Image (cartoon, rainbow over all chains, first blue to last red; front, side, top):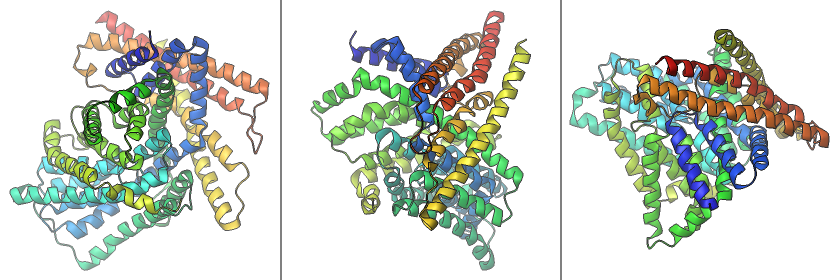
Length: 434
Length: 163
């Protein structure tokens, strides 16, 4: 059997055990080492397993993951999500759909401190959903807006997906972070436009909130200022080359800790919650990344990426059409698989092809994040939707999915804009000093 | 028997999770101290990067079992959920067995790999910290997860047999 055939059988078996419910990281490590055993020798495969696991867990470049996750957990435990929502409310609250807009703005703000979609959706959902219920918002709009805006967590830096993409491809995490800023703002604006359009069509779905005084507006701004301070420290530090990614995450976590302590919002119990929360998410991510590294070694010796790149390169299609097909593949894959799992599984295979076709790898990273954002809100495996369902227990799942669709449209528009104007993603990274 | 084994594995996982927590806090402290050292005093902590990297083993390795206790390792559930209960139990037994094989092999190979590093005297470049205790730590962290998977395997088999 040729190595490519073994590789294809390996991928097929992997998808099979994914669907049987084996944890994604375990499944990738299992198939990776088993395939390596078959293609090289059993001794080499077994040795690869232990070496890859140790080198992945003890890799300094991967310590960026716990640091940024810890930052998000401390920011949540320090009540920053509530303060951001309050700030958004004072600005947008009196408009029709204002609470949903405030939620989107607050999600964008929280995404500047947190790198995960479900953590952003959970943090903002806990704060904003009870408020929208109190003002008789339509359930679909309320839940759909939080689930969709939560997905900004991986586009606006810091972002777990950018970190993992950077590690798997060798691209600069700092450049990827900076590349996500403008598309993140663009997408947040598109989401807000969607809310306005929905309210124009049917004003009863989103009544106006209570008016707020100037004093309240000014007080609300402190929530924005602390977020901006952290964001400038972390992303500015990366942008100017002051910090390595791990240092930026550490500075952000320490900054969030200081803000929480100085505002007397973070007590010992809250800190322990943040530690446990960060450990849980770190472990989830690291197990998948480690599994992907083992699997990536198997895929590399199977020569599938080379053969695929050759084959696609020989197709009589323009590269834009091929990119369209890749995006479609991610879109469909994202419906059925977790975002991180999909990226770690496919990047070792697809990335060489993207480079061969001459696409900018940083731009491609942003596109991948946008497409996986769709994946986290589309049925049947829309993680954010399940997170929101966990908070809004009385809202049927179908109602949340129904609320998602207009926002999905905004995401598709954003991908189109990024395809037509790649500079939106590549301009800021081109200014970085390293 | 299964209950007491599970209780022991849960309690061990919980303790290891606290070790991981201490590792995370230490990692943050070290990264921040390194930044302050570099930016303010032009004096990075000697071997700071190495220690942070080794703490990475503590943070993830020691938290893996507890994450399994919480059932938080990401998996695709929507297909299996639609199947009858008995089929779900058979499938759970199968995938748990695969996981068990993986972690038993990882534990064994990590012991072997650690021994080979110890024999060669492999140490980190700046501080001369030996690698092997961290590789053996990974093997040790596999113990509670293997116990948890073993309990889950037997439970799934029993469910599948009883229907």
